[in-house]
Length: 263
Image (cartoon, rainbow, N blue to C red):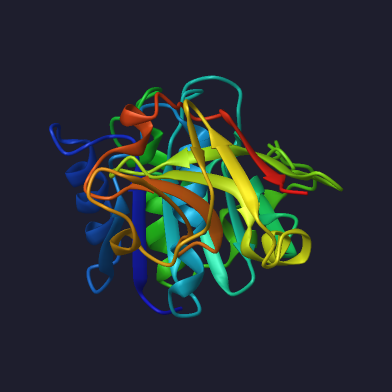
């Protein structure tokens, strides 16, 4: 194992929750390197958590353990799980948050039910991040195997991103994530765009706005103007040069985006 542990949650930094998880981890794996991916996931937003982790986790060295706690079902019968996807390990709730990876990678998963690896004192029904997920993460980082922390589980809760639609008239997709800057990240990949649009003239409709071309960077448009571009995640994005596209274009997550080919 790499002894690198990442943490992602919707806890924010106002309260003690993140520090409590780190304290438990370091008590078990004092040599671990703790890296925060994000603690600003919108509360209980499983899709946002999945998107953020997906775009960071597989850049880490092999053997990294990722603690992911966006858990609106804490205290309910949902299972705590640990899984290996590719050469990365993940620990968190079985609520669909990891399912974004399943179409791309084989995985093996266990239901965390060996309480030997849980926190032994003051077990809370509402803070599994501290009492179940954090200690299991630390033990995995120390070299404990998946099969030691739980028993195999074949079928996990899954979510599916909406699939963009391509036809002779163009592409139709949806906004799947809005980042901190208000950029609208769609489910239209660069590959799909290249296959169906290429260099053809288009009109791009999103919210109350129509754009006529794809640009390379924000600097290709005037300040305050919208821009359509391929973002760092490899997906089509809509942003505002020095502005917030979500607010300025009156667009929420799930909004439709249409790319219409010009005849």
